[in-house]
Length: 319
Image (cartoon, rainbow, N blue to C red; front, side, top):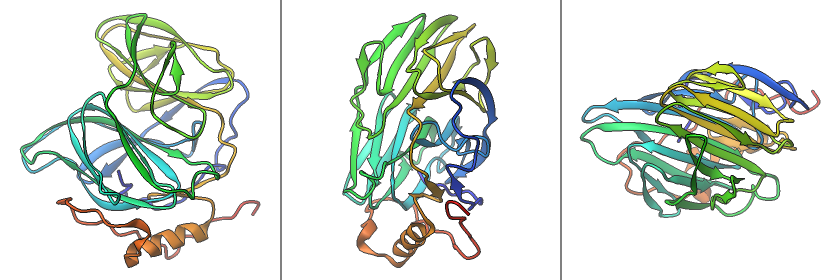
């Protein structure tokens, strides 16, 4: 998806407290934003925490029911330096990109698009007749060795699912409970979807070298005894080898984590870069129609221009 909010400020990964070397319980309120015509809740980046491992962006969309003619309408837009990761819970969305991919993502599936040097895509509701949508979209910052490569796209229709303590656990990224996700990423990461249709409690094994965070997608849950509802990201720091999770009724949670990212990044609009010159070049290339980003065919939604960079000053490292 595209960041189409009015906020054009730059997110620098080091403009927040450093990753703690021990467990913490840091509550971060999401903020409202818009993607196309849909209201969403943005958990990352925030002023308190820019990243969790290589995860540098997290939007929670829905659950929402929309009428005829409404829905997701995000026209062609570019990305660089990242992977877009879409986890579909309810509804269907058509992904189209400049590689020629056309893929409907359905509940229980992940779409992973690797932008690398440059790609463009569009995301639209499948039908104009209305329906529902519940999804999480995240961005993964690509490390230096991977961010200049060729773009790619893949749909993952079958992800490992296991049961633990009354939770149905989908392993979205990485390895947990002896199950390994097929989703290909370039940094040590974990992503888990926990769903319970009744009271449940479980202790999740964690990699103590990872930093972790939890976002409730529906219902409510206790994380290490602390009550958590939707619209709050609970950042957990590092140093945890397990996490106690429980709920008294139906609930759904997203657990993300990863090795602290060792490179400083800038996030502006739909770009993940290392300096202002890269951002300016990407915006200029997109708005001029440069072949770097290719063309997206078939989307009914208008193309999104890169915002005006006039007046945006990005402080360079060490200044």
